[in-house]
Image 1: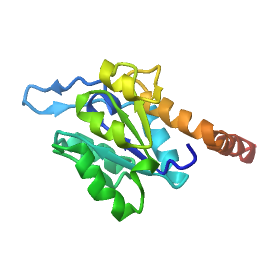
Image 2 (image 1 turned 180 degrees about the vertical axis):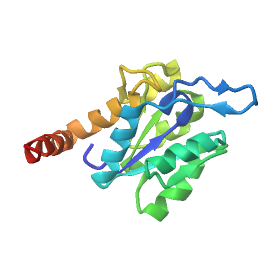
Image 3 (image 1 turned 135 degrees about the horizontal axis):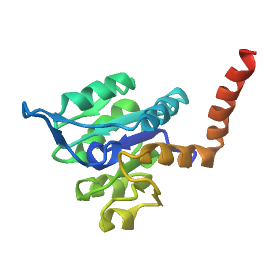
Image 4 (image 1 turned 60 degrees about the vertical axis):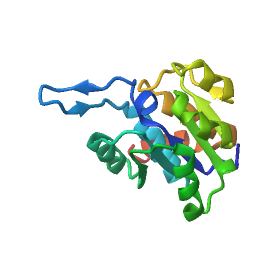
Length: 173
């Protein structure tokens, strides 16, 4: 667990609840959970790298990635594992140092080859079967936060995050 340096995230069904809202103008929209944003931010602050890989293209996803300072966003992926394997050498990260979170069959290749596969609670059975950890929360409902907490609890780093915020309370007295 201490070797996990990269968090690889799917979008629909992991960062979102899997539903795509379509406005009257035909443009799709997605909702993201704020707790997931804080978790990815803190993971990065601890030196981790976050990668988002999605099979679709969405300006909303690109905007959310920019908001969270996630610079490694791969959209329109037809083969998530191949795309991840092209990126990782540039980051000097091995596939065994990746924790990946998925929910559907498109995520299976990455989950089967990464160092720590994670499934969200509402993932399909085949994804849950290869996961080392299954969240209690569903995608889009804070599942990424739960997964990051799980990873960081294992290394003792979650306590560092909590202590950071407690120190902020002490400093403002």
